[in-house]
Length: 326
Image 1 (cartoon, helix red, strand yellow):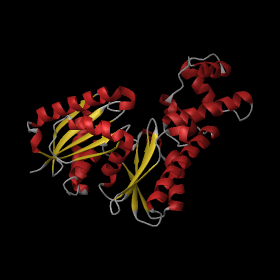
Image 2 (cartoon, helix red, strand yellow):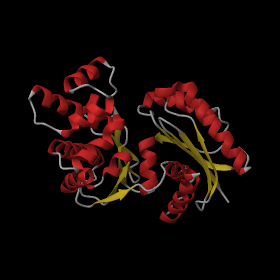
Image 3 (tube, one colour):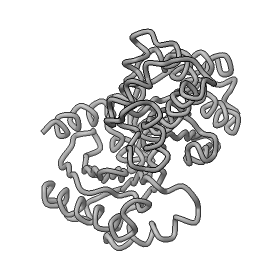
Image 4 (cartoon, rainbow, N blue to C red):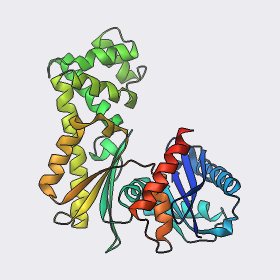
Protein backbone atom coordinates (compact mmCIF):
# COMPACT_ATOMS: atom_id res chain seq x y z
CA UNK A 1 0.00 0.00 0.00
CA UNK A 2 1.28 3.45 -0.91
CA UNK A 3 0.66 6.55 1.23
CA UNK A 4 0.46 10.18 0.20
CA UNK A 5 0.77 13.53 1.96
CA UNK A 6 -1.39 16.46 0.89
CA UNK A 7 -1.14 20.00 2.27
CA UNK A 8 -3.32 23.06 1.60
CA UNK A 9 -1.65 26.21 2.90
CA UNK A 10 -4.23 28.98 3.03
CA UNK A 11 -4.38 32.56 4.20
CA UNK A 12 -6.25 31.62 7.39
CA UNK A 13 -5.33 27.97 8.03
CA UNK A 14 -3.34 24.97 6.85
CA UNK A 15 -4.92 21.55 6.28
CA UNK A 16 -2.76 18.47 5.93
CA UNK A 17 -3.71 14.83 5.36
CA UNK A 18 -2.15 11.45 4.86
CA UNK A 19 -4.18 9.11 2.67
CA UNK A 20 -3.61 5.72 1.10
CA UNK A 21 -3.80 5.00 -2.61
CA UNK A 22 -7.51 4.13 -2.34
CA UNK A 23 -8.42 7.52 -0.88
CA UNK A 24 -8.77 6.35 2.72
CA UNK A 25 -7.73 9.06 5.18
CA UNK A 26 -5.30 7.97 7.86
CA UNK A 27 -4.66 11.37 9.43
CA UNK A 28 -5.86 14.97 9.26
CA UNK A 29 -4.49 18.13 10.87
CA UNK A 30 -5.25 21.82 11.17
CA UNK A 31 -2.55 24.37 11.83
CA UNK A 32 -2.02 28.08 11.37
CA UNK A 33 -2.07 30.22 8.25
CA UNK A 34 0.49 29.20 5.63
CA UNK A 35 0.46 32.16 3.24
CA UNK A 36 3.86 33.81 3.64
CA UNK A 37 2.38 37.09 2.43
CA UNK A 38 0.43 37.33 5.69
CA UNK A 39 2.55 35.34 8.19
CA UNK A 40 6.04 35.49 6.68
CA UNK A 41 8.25 32.58 5.77
CA UNK A 42 8.74 31.70 9.45
CA UNK A 43 4.98 31.45 9.91
CA UNK A 44 4.66 29.34 6.78
CA UNK A 45 7.40 27.01 7.99
CA UNK A 46 5.81 26.72 11.43
CA UNK A 47 2.38 25.86 9.98
CA UNK A 48 3.82 23.11 7.78
CA UNK A 49 6.00 21.63 10.51
CA UNK A 50 3.15 21.59 13.05
CA UNK A 51 0.74 20.03 10.56
CA UNK A 52 3.21 17.37 9.48
CA UNK A 53 4.03 16.44 13.07
CA UNK A 54 0.32 15.94 13.78
CA UNK A 55 -0.44 13.72 10.77
CA UNK A 56 2.70 11.62 11.24
CA UNK A 57 1.75 11.04 14.88
CA UNK A 58 -1.86 10.18 14.02
CA UNK A 59 -0.99 7.83 11.17
CA UNK A 60 1.89 6.18 13.05
CA UNK A 61 3.78 6.03 9.77
CA UNK A 62 7.42 7.02 9.35
CA UNK A 63 8.07 9.85 6.93
CA UNK A 64 9.94 7.38 4.76
CA UNK A 65 6.64 5.52 4.13
CA UNK A 66 5.25 8.41 2.07
CA UNK A 67 5.28 7.70 -1.66
CA UNK A 68 4.49 11.26 -2.76
CA UNK A 69 3.62 14.71 -1.40
CA UNK A 70 1.62 17.60 -2.81
CA UNK A 71 1.52 21.19 -1.56
CA UNK A 72 -1.09 23.77 -2.60
CA UNK A 73 0.29 27.08 -1.38
CA UNK A 74 -1.52 30.41 -1.16
CA UNK A 75 0.92 33.13 -2.15
CA UNK A 76 2.96 30.91 -4.46
CA UNK A 77 2.40 33.28 -7.35
CA UNK A 78 5.70 33.73 -9.17
CA UNK A 79 8.78 31.69 -10.11
CA UNK A 80 10.85 33.86 -7.77
CA UNK A 81 8.86 32.42 -4.82
CA UNK A 82 9.98 28.89 -5.57
CA UNK A 83 13.50 28.78 -4.04
CA UNK A 84 12.35 29.97 -0.61
CA UNK A 85 9.37 27.63 -0.54
CA UNK A 86 11.38 24.69 -1.80
CA UNK A 87 13.88 25.34 0.96
CA UNK A 88 11.17 25.34 3.63
CA UNK A 89 9.69 22.08 2.36
CA UNK A 90 13.15 20.50 2.07
CA UNK A 91 13.65 20.98 5.82
CA UNK A 92 10.72 18.65 6.50
CA UNK A 93 12.86 15.62 5.73
CA UNK A 94 10.58 14.14 3.07
CA UNK A 95 12.27 11.51 0.92
CA UNK A 96 9.46 11.14 -1.66
CA UNK A 97 8.77 13.07 -4.89
CA UNK A 98 7.14 16.44 -4.17
CA UNK A 99 4.74 18.60 -6.20
CA UNK A 100 4.15 22.26 -5.35
CA UNK A 101 1.47 24.49 -6.90
CA UNK A 102 -0.54 27.62 -6.24
CA UNK A 103 -3.55 26.83 -4.06
CA UNK A 104 -5.94 27.58 -6.94
CA UNK A 105 -4.40 24.65 -8.80
CA UNK A 106 -5.10 22.43 -5.80
CA UNK A 107 -8.77 23.36 -6.15
CA UNK A 108 -8.61 22.39 -9.82
CA UNK A 109 -7.10 18.99 -9.02
CA UNK A 110 -9.74 18.44 -6.34
CA UNK A 111 -12.56 19.06 -8.78
CA UNK A 112 -11.17 17.69 -12.02
CA UNK A 113 -8.45 15.31 -10.94
CA UNK A 114 -5.45 15.63 -13.21
CA UNK A 115 -7.68 16.19 -16.23
CA UNK A 116 -7.82 19.25 -18.49
CA UNK A 117 -9.51 22.10 -16.65
CA UNK A 118 -9.77 25.64 -15.35
CA UNK A 119 -10.25 26.57 -11.70
CA UNK A 120 -12.17 29.76 -11.00
CA UNK A 121 -11.75 30.88 -7.40
CA UNK A 122 -13.90 33.52 -5.73
CA UNK A 123 -13.64 33.73 -1.96
CA UNK A 124 -12.29 36.74 -0.12
CA UNK A 125 -10.21 37.40 -3.23
CA UNK A 126 -10.27 35.86 -6.69
CA UNK A 127 -7.96 33.84 -8.90
CA UNK A 128 -8.00 31.64 -11.97
CA UNK A 129 -5.63 28.89 -13.07
CA UNK A 130 -5.79 26.21 -15.74
CA UNK A 131 -3.93 23.03 -16.58
CA UNK A 132 -3.41 20.99 -19.72
CA UNK A 133 -1.99 17.57 -18.78
CA UNK A 134 -1.17 16.72 -22.39
CA UNK A 135 1.15 19.67 -22.92
CA UNK A 136 1.98 20.28 -19.23
CA UNK A 137 1.04 23.92 -19.73
CA UNK A 138 -0.43 26.07 -16.98
CA UNK A 139 -2.61 29.11 -17.64
CA UNK A 140 -3.12 31.86 -15.11
CA UNK A 141 -4.06 35.38 -14.17
CA UNK A 142 -2.03 37.39 -11.66
CA UNK A 143 -4.28 36.77 -8.66
CA UNK A 144 -3.65 40.36 -7.62
CA UNK A 145 -7.26 41.50 -7.65
CA UNK A 146 -8.42 45.01 -8.48
CA UNK A 147 -4.85 46.29 -8.85
CA UNK A 148 -4.66 44.25 -12.05
CA UNK A 149 -8.31 44.58 -13.07
CA UNK A 150 -9.20 41.07 -11.85
CA UNK A 151 -12.66 40.75 -10.28
CA UNK A 152 -14.38 39.64 -8.20
CA UNK A 153 -13.97 38.06 -4.84
CA UNK A 154 -15.83 39.36 -1.81
CA UNK A 155 -13.26 42.09 -1.20
CA UNK A 156 -13.53 43.40 -4.76
CA UNK A 157 -17.33 43.13 -4.71
CA UNK A 158 -17.54 45.32 -1.60
CA UNK A 159 -14.91 47.69 -3.02
CA UNK A 160 -17.10 48.21 -6.08
CA UNK A 161 -20.24 48.45 -3.93
CA UNK A 162 -18.70 51.34 -2.01
CA UNK A 163 -18.18 53.14 -5.31
CA UNK A 164 -21.85 52.67 -6.18
CA UNK A 165 -22.93 53.86 -2.74
CA UNK A 166 -20.76 56.93 -3.24
CA UNK A 167 -22.38 57.50 -6.63
CA UNK A 168 -25.72 57.81 -4.84
CA UNK A 169 -24.28 60.45 -2.51
CA UNK A 170 -22.80 62.48 -5.39
CA UNK A 171 -25.94 61.98 -7.53
CA UNK A 172 -23.83 60.23 -10.15
CA UNK A 173 -25.94 57.10 -9.72
CA UNK A 174 -29.35 55.99 -8.42
CA UNK A 175 -30.45 55.22 -4.90
CA UNK A 176 -29.56 51.79 -3.61
CA UNK A 177 -30.50 49.96 -0.44
CA UNK A 178 -26.83 49.07 -0.13
CA UNK A 179 -26.29 52.54 1.32
CA UNK A 180 -28.58 51.84 4.28
CA UNK A 181 -27.10 48.37 4.80
CA UNK A 182 -23.54 49.70 4.88
CA UNK A 183 -24.47 52.63 7.14
CA UNK A 184 -26.07 50.25 9.63
CA UNK A 185 -23.23 47.72 9.40
CA UNK A 186 -20.56 50.17 10.55
CA UNK A 187 -22.72 52.40 12.74
CA UNK A 188 -22.34 55.52 10.60
CA UNK A 189 -24.63 58.50 11.16
CA UNK A 190 -25.54 58.90 7.50
CA UNK A 191 -24.19 58.36 3.99
CA UNK A 192 -21.78 61.27 4.14
CA UNK A 193 -20.39 60.03 7.45
CA UNK A 194 -20.00 56.52 5.99
CA UNK A 195 -17.97 57.82 3.05
CA UNK A 196 -15.83 60.10 5.21
CA UNK A 197 -15.12 57.28 7.66
CA UNK A 198 -14.32 54.88 4.84
CA UNK A 199 -11.86 57.28 3.21
CA UNK A 200 -10.21 58.11 6.54
CA UNK A 201 -10.00 54.48 7.60
CA UNK A 202 -12.11 54.45 10.75
CA UNK A 203 -15.03 52.51 9.23
CA UNK A 204 -14.23 48.96 8.18
CA UNK A 205 -16.18 48.27 5.00
CA UNK A 206 -14.73 44.93 3.96
CA UNK A 207 -15.32 41.49 2.49
CA UNK A 208 -17.52 40.47 5.42
CA UNK A 209 -20.31 42.57 3.88
CA UNK A 210 -20.48 40.58 0.64
CA UNK A 211 -23.33 38.30 1.85
CA UNK A 212 -25.38 41.43 2.61
CA UNK A 213 -25.00 42.54 -1.01
CA UNK A 214 -26.54 39.26 -2.14
CA UNK A 215 -29.39 39.72 0.37
CA UNK A 216 -30.16 43.18 -0.98
CA UNK A 217 -30.04 41.87 -4.55
CA UNK A 218 -32.52 39.10 -3.75
CA UNK A 219 -34.87 41.75 -2.37
CA UNK A 220 -34.92 43.33 -5.82
CA UNK A 221 -32.44 46.20 -5.54
CA UNK A 222 -31.37 46.81 -9.13
CA UNK A 223 -28.00 48.34 -8.27
CA UNK A 224 -27.08 45.28 -6.21
CA UNK A 225 -28.34 42.91 -8.90
CA UNK A 226 -26.35 44.69 -11.60
CA UNK A 227 -23.30 44.66 -9.35
CA UNK A 228 -23.45 40.89 -8.88
CA UNK A 229 -24.02 40.36 -12.58
CA UNK A 230 -20.94 42.50 -13.25
CA UNK A 231 -18.96 40.29 -10.86
CA UNK A 232 -20.12 37.15 -12.67
CA UNK A 233 -19.12 38.50 -16.07
CA UNK A 234 -15.75 39.64 -14.72
CA UNK A 235 -15.07 36.17 -13.29
CA UNK A 236 -15.93 34.75 -16.70
CA UNK A 237 -13.47 37.11 -18.36
CA UNK A 238 -10.71 35.78 -16.12
CA UNK A 239 -11.64 32.24 -17.11
CA UNK A 240 -11.71 33.21 -20.79
CA UNK A 241 -8.21 34.61 -20.51
CA UNK A 242 -6.91 31.30 -19.17
CA UNK A 243 -8.91 29.36 -21.77
CA UNK A 244 -7.21 31.42 -24.50
CA UNK A 245 -3.77 30.78 -23.04
CA UNK A 246 -4.35 27.02 -23.11
CA UNK A 247 -6.26 26.89 -26.42
CA UNK A 248 -9.25 25.24 -24.72
CA UNK A 249 -12.05 27.16 -26.51
CA UNK A 250 -12.93 24.23 -28.78
CA UNK A 251 -12.08 21.47 -26.28
CA UNK A 252 -13.90 19.43 -23.66
CA UNK A 253 -12.75 20.58 -20.22
CA UNK A 254 -14.02 21.29 -16.71
CA UNK A 255 -14.50 24.70 -15.15
CA UNK A 256 -14.20 24.13 -11.41
CA UNK A 257 -15.84 26.72 -9.14
CA UNK A 258 -14.29 27.16 -5.72
CA UNK A 259 -14.90 29.70 -2.98
CA UNK A 260 -17.65 31.11 -0.81
CA UNK A 261 -18.84 33.73 -3.31
CA UNK A 262 -20.41 30.99 -5.41
CA UNK A 263 -22.73 30.25 -2.48
CA UNK A 264 -24.54 33.32 -3.80
CA UNK A 265 -26.11 31.06 -6.40
CA UNK A 266 -27.67 31.90 -9.77
CA UNK A 267 -27.37 35.69 -9.44
CA UNK A 268 -23.61 35.28 -9.79
CA UNK A 269 -23.21 31.93 -11.53
CA UNK A 270 -25.71 32.35 -14.39
CA UNK A 271 -24.14 35.44 -16.03
CA UNK A 272 -20.70 33.96 -15.44
CA UNK A 273 -21.59 30.65 -17.08
CA UNK A 274 -23.44 32.26 -20.00
CA UNK A 275 -20.33 34.30 -20.78
CA UNK A 276 -18.00 31.31 -20.58
CA UNK A 277 -20.23 29.05 -22.66
CA UNK A 278 -20.57 31.62 -25.43
CA UNK A 279 -16.79 31.43 -25.76
CA UNK A 280 -16.14 27.76 -24.93
CA UNK A 281 -19.37 25.81 -25.56
CA UNK A 282 -17.91 22.40 -24.69
CA UNK A 283 -16.90 23.42 -21.19
CA UNK A 284 -18.50 21.57 -18.28
CA UNK A 285 -19.34 23.26 -14.98
CA UNK A 286 -18.11 21.58 -11.78
CA UNK A 287 -18.99 22.92 -8.34
CA UNK A 288 -16.13 21.99 -6.03
CA UNK A 289 -17.68 19.89 -3.30
CA UNK A 290 -14.45 18.87 -1.65
CA UNK A 291 -11.87 20.56 0.56
CA UNK A 292 -8.97 21.87 -1.58
CA UNK A 293 -6.55 19.62 0.31
CA UNK A 294 -8.07 16.78 -1.73
CA UNK A 295 -6.37 18.35 -4.72
CA UNK A 296 -3.05 18.35 -2.87
CA UNK A 297 -3.41 14.59 -2.38
CA UNK A 298 -4.23 14.18 -6.08
CA UNK A 299 -1.07 16.17 -6.86
CA UNK A 300 0.91 13.86 -4.57
CA UNK A 301 -0.42 10.84 -6.42
CA UNK A 302 0.59 12.27 -9.78
CA UNK A 303 4.19 12.36 -8.57
CA UNK A 304 4.26 8.56 -8.96
CA UNK A 305 1.97 8.48 -12.02
CA UNK A 306 -1.04 7.29 -10.01
CA UNK A 307 -4.37 8.53 -11.38
CA UNK A 308 -6.84 9.72 -8.75
CA UNK A 309 -10.08 8.32 -10.15
CA UNK A 310 -13.43 9.97 -9.38
CA UNK A 311 -14.02 7.16 -6.87
CA UNK A 312 -10.78 7.95 -5.06
CA UNK A 313 -11.59 11.67 -5.00
CA UNK A 314 -15.08 10.98 -3.66
CA UNK A 315 -13.64 8.82 -0.88
CA UNK A 316 -11.13 11.52 0.01
CA UNK A 317 -13.82 14.22 0.02
CA UNK A 318 -16.31 12.23 2.09
CA UNK A 319 -13.86 11.34 4.85
CA UNK A 320 -12.34 14.81 4.91
CA UNK A 321 -15.73 16.45 5.33
CA UNK A 322 -16.24 14.30 8.39
CA UNK A 323 -12.88 15.38 9.77
CA UNK A 324 -13.59 19.06 9.10
CA UNK A 325 -16.92 18.81 10.91
CA UNK A 326 -15.26 17.64 14.11
